[in-house]
Length: 326
Image (cartoon, rainbow, N blue to C red; front, top):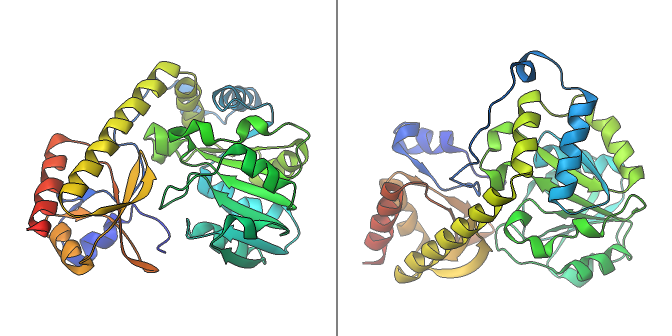
């Protein structure tokens, strides 16, 4: 499958227009971001202090309900690229189809990568990777299933980049400082709609956390990121309201897609993946309306849609899908 969305430059290069002409539905980022708080001037002019980073990590630990070690890092993508270096290369089983960067990162670090389609086949590997809930089909696994799996592998890496949308699936609360076979990757920017901050977290036991800190370096996140995220992660009211809104909007997208003949594969409340019977015509209709989405080479009849941000964007998407269905 394709590696990631957000590549609007490619749409413009292939089909013309400018950034302002296009609606980018290729990412799973909250289109209604957290309102930026005031950022102290020193956040821009000074290096982050250890105390500021510690405070951010403690706030994240409370938000994710974990007693394990929480490490701030410059985006979940950075975690994906660093985590393969925590162990000596061996065999890694990755539950697929899923986000392609996991495979790329482990291969780059010298691992033998095996993509498996069944959860049960992850056992007995040096490292296993599960994206929970999964991108792009949204399938999820319960914490007790993942905890059991972690006892049968050297290390279970759980990518929880979309777990803010399904907190009941998170295994973060099961990680302690003594944990040695379970590690969680979290994204900040997706749910909070602030992907440009490039901020994420890794939750792990003390040994893996110490190794990851050394690999990430002394200033893994920026001062402005710390200032914004420390405020946002403590804002329980905003988190609750955002989840309610996203549930409503993803339901609206499902109803629209169903009316226009698309069948739901799955997804999260930040993106939905559908099956269509006429891929090329749907692509043509969406591009004609300057709407950019996600397509998957390995699953050529799938389309993944993020959520529109404005009423006029919803209206344009509806017109494009209606024309496709006629």
